[in-house]
Length: 228
Image (cartoon, rainbow, N blue to C red; front, side, top):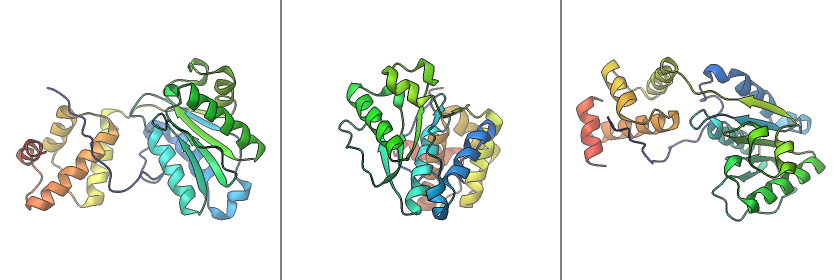
């Protein structure tokens, strides 16, 4: 059966509380403690954190969750990923620098990331970064690669089948949605098993079920896909 990866947006952004840690509890707990609250911002450690693991292991979710948490505290944050072709200059008002997809950085992005790192150290700002490879294996300029690896480093792992089911069940319960075992089996075998895509799929199914005023069944999902 062909797996389908849906490209639709999430209604709400990722949060630390919505991250199902599974084998990645240490990384989640580290970031929860580090983010803290607004009152502890001046005490926040400037030691960098680097997350690495395969696609779908939750790296971007965690970085976006950190970004959202800091912004809720009134802090401005620098963000860089592989889609940012013209990175801005470092801003002294930033409370942290977040860098995602570092394994994809081109020379311009690597130069910007290195500059951000230097300025972050000068101004005692934190850096939280993520990539698919451990720091020593990143094909980046040496001065950037070594800085990514000198702080806290966490390896993220993919959730297993049982854990993915638990996440789906938890997300469905939060929405007041009933997912039968048959529907969950269908979702896990016919669509991308990437957790982000599964969450987006659940959102789309829930919206379609509400729109059509029908229960969530396999025929409903098939009809939705035919009309998408």
